[in-house]
Figure 1 (tube, rainbow, N blue to C red):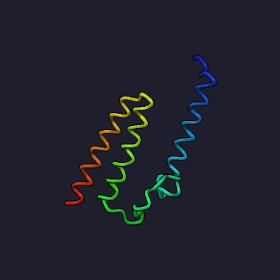
Figure 2: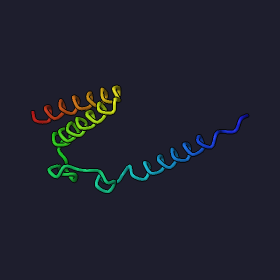
Figure 3: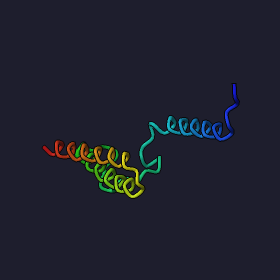
Figure 4: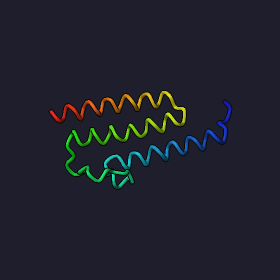
Length: 94
């Protein structure tokens, strides 16, 4: 059986490292993970509408980044997430 290339071993090691860091950070607050949180979002007790509006804003920005980089499928998926978030924000207002 052929031995994996050195690059494949490095990729596997970095994937394992990423998996480990994700497991460690799953229960951390967003600020502890270095995520930017809009100042008007109360992370202790967020309301569904506020959270949905924030997600809509962020996915809108990510959609623009994906489009600029030519990542069409990713941009489409992010745009769909934005639509869902906007619908959730409207429903929360009712």
